[in-house]
Image (tube, rainbow, N blue to C red; front, side, top):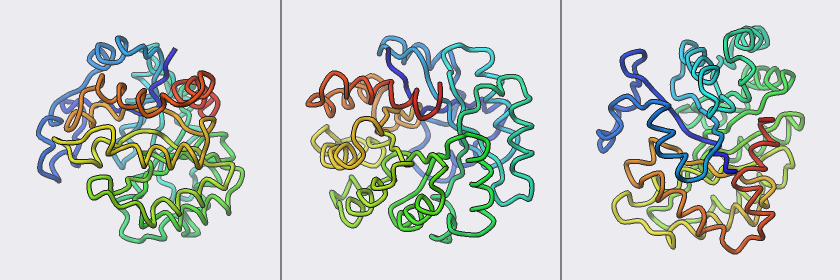
Length: 280
């Protein structure tokens, strides 16, 4: 069994996705993507459970994602959004858990990558919100870029009771081939046992039309070497990946990048880690 620990869904008739119109090249994504289409892509790849991840910075989307999870067995978990700067994060989390599908809430995420302050994670109000996420027994997905890794390292150290999950390897500059200081910082982040990492989002950090597995390998090997298979999990980042690769191509690349691992290690990357970390 394979778990896809990171994908998205959206219905543009229900909720706008403003980020789809902020950059050129995202035209293929400017439509609705349904659970049925996800299933058609994921099931042939052996995926039997997924984690659906938020895309909108706002309170309205997460209840919709939880409702989808309640309706569809394929979606085993939801990483939603709450305002970490608010006074009552605990209350907001408790309210989400009372909704249809609330039992599928496994984590929280914020688009830290879009925050102009590289130290946003270190703010007192944000830390207070993150403590509430930890107290609720949920994970926190780190959607960061390399310049924000020092703050992520400091925050992981300051909140040892919170399970962090790095999305997309923290978006290293794969297209340029640069590895430092990203690699050193990721190794420092991995020194904290409460941090895991998703093997996801690499194809969209590479040259969209001309990437190959060799371009991804140094970055995947850095993460696997730093975190170990028991703290790495596969994620397709579908449908965002479609600007650079099909679902099958992303899965094939991940399989090739992990081919040297033992069967037990591959089982962790493709299912076990996600199940443990998110409590699926």
